[in-house]
Length: 317
Image (tube, rainbow, N blue to C red):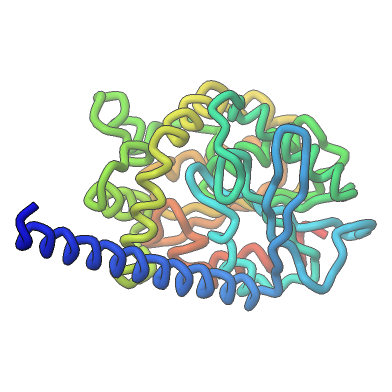
C-alpha cells in the first residue's frame, strides 16, 4: 500500500478515536448534569426486578415509600420520554409526599422488547405490579400525555389505590383532533415517531413545545442521536398505545379529586380535551396555561408545579 494512503488511514483512525473519546466525555458530562438535576429534587435512582423485565425509577431519598398513610406521589411520563423529564417539576413541587417516578416499560433505561404489548391497558397493569412490589398502597398520580391515559386507566381499574389525579396535557379523552392527528391522517410523517436525523429532532421539539428550554448544541446532538436510535421501538409503542388510548368511557365513574392542566398552544392534544375532561371528571378543576405547548413540565416547570402543589395540599388530601 502506498505510504501516503497509509498515512491518511492513520490520520482518519486517530480522528475517529478522538471523536469517540470526545463523545464519551460529553455523555459523561450530560449524565452528570441529569443526575445533579434529580438530586436537587431530593431523588435517587433505583432499579427493581419484575416479571417481564427490570424497572428503573427515581424516588425520594429521605422518605420511605412503604406504609405511607398520606400516599405516594406517582409521576408517569409521556410517550417517548423518560423519568428524568420530571426533575425540574419535582424540585419546584417541594412536596412532603414521597415521590415515585418510573421509566415506563420500553422507555428510558428499561429494556426495549419488541415482543411486549405496550398498550395502555398493559402498561397500567405493569405500573400496578410495580406499586405492589414496592408495597405502595395509595397514590396521588401526576400523569403527562400518555402517562395521563395510564393514570385514568389506573383510577378506573384500581380505584382503591388512587387518591387523586393531576392530568397534564393528558391523552385518553380526545374530543377534538389536534394538529398531530391531522398530520398523521394526511399520511405525512408522524413528528413524534419519524425522527431519523437532527432536523427531524428539531422539528419534534418545535412541535411539542411552544417554549422549549435551552439545550447547548453538543447535548442537543446527544439527545437527537438517542431519539433517532429509538425509531423502531417508538413506532411499535405508538401503534400499541393508540389501539386503546381512549379512556372516555370510564371518566364518569372516576370519583377522585382531579386537576387538569393544559397549555393553550398544545399541538399534540387539543386544549378542547381539557374542557371535556373537566366536564366528565366529577368535581375536577381546570387550569389553562397561556403560551405553553404540550409539555408544561419542561416549558414552565415552576408554574406547573405550583398549580399541582396547591391542588395536592388544599384539594386532594
